[in-house]
Length: 340
Image (cartoon, rainbow, N blue to C red):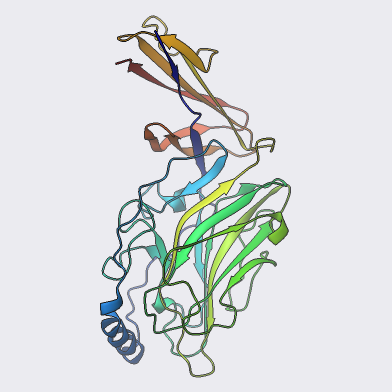
């Protein structure tokens, strides 16, 4: 006989979008700005960073957001799960989009293009301000809530770039409409390259982690915003590709988490395939069938519509599965495995 023991997996549920994604605009960039950018990209080509991405990491039982940006524009992609993007730049054009600079740099983890990036053509102008926003889904904050992410720009970048991380309590869908507006996101948690200096933004994937000491809320609902933000009024063009990858929001063990996940194991019973056991470990023999039951309860005050599930032993089990889970409701998923 030998025991089976599985580590608890993480279930990450997404929220329905509160605002539509902004459509990509067909208007071309102005010829002079496009020509300068294109020339510099070619000049920097020898410095392209095409190091292969790392493996997609296993989730943690404490993660309430774990986004690797594998395919952002799917019908059930991030903007159907509550992420919001909005471009407040002077003469706005492109906004945050799927990573595709495989000839410049690859994702931190997952598929080569599995990241999101703010575009140098966030503005049509070679003057004025870039202010392009990406908002997380609503987060139920606690004293121990923390957020981590990876960011970078292109190797041998020709234009200084900058990223702000801001926080908000409440509905948090307002970032204003003008370049200097911040709406409800008054709390500045992090400002990477605030002086907008050349070569000061990371040119390889660099991890940052923020918590309450940095300005994140400690209770209630809210959001975190990533803001691509540079100024060009001094005649210096700014705003190179600004990549973002593996955004993770975690809670402490004793936090009032918005999702309650329980994982149990039991001998599989064909007569009761939907029954959950009460144990977290059992003893089995080779050839036995084991029923793994993942049961999640929605503790939020809103309906959750898309769910992803990762087990630290086997990786992804569910990927944005559409299930309507009302406040206070529970849903369970079963896997039956044969012991070998």
